[in-house]
Image (cartoon, rainbow, N blue to C red; front, top):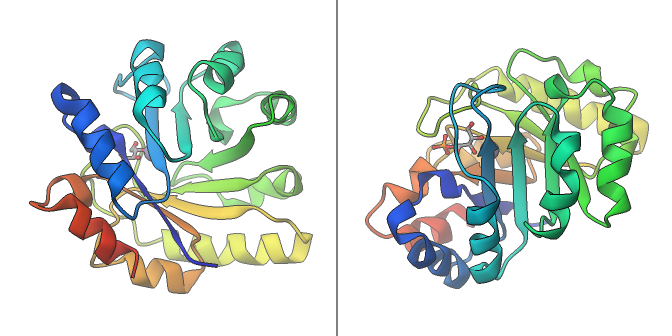
Length: 216
Ligand code: DX5
Ligand code: ZN
């Protein structure tokens, strides 16, 4: 399977959001990665439904929505319908009744992801791995773009790959944070299926070309 590149709109120019969305539309990127932060689960606030709806209107590729919010259950319907998520990812650390949350997301016909913070071990997913379409391993502490990649993530990819194989599960492995041209190939070699890249794409002079390089 070819790897997926999901540019993170968190690093886009929000004053020119439509321009940046159209850049991703015409690039070789596979998904849009969209970070929703509530100022509670993470120490930052990003975007809400008015902006998500505008993104959904212009984006022509699947929307990979990463919820860094407490109580995601309150808003699942809106993320699935108004925000038009293709993949909706919740944090393991934010869900008291994760099994129920996963079933609710599935009931909307939306693919479901579970994310682990850097401090959360892969073994936490043992009893849920067969229920999810994607596992998002955070390779930085969530909340901000442009942080340094945490090297321990490689070990977690290996552990997650083993867990998926042993459980005969089908989850994709997505990695988020500190990824760019210097490390994307080693992450794919380690077993990652999807890579989120924010700063490494949007800080370059030619983002379309950078995305093309990340697809090689
Ligand atoms: C961080 C977000 C990431 C972020 C990645 O909390 O989940 O998606 O945008 O940004 P970079 O690629 O710049 O580390
Ligand atoms: Zn993210």
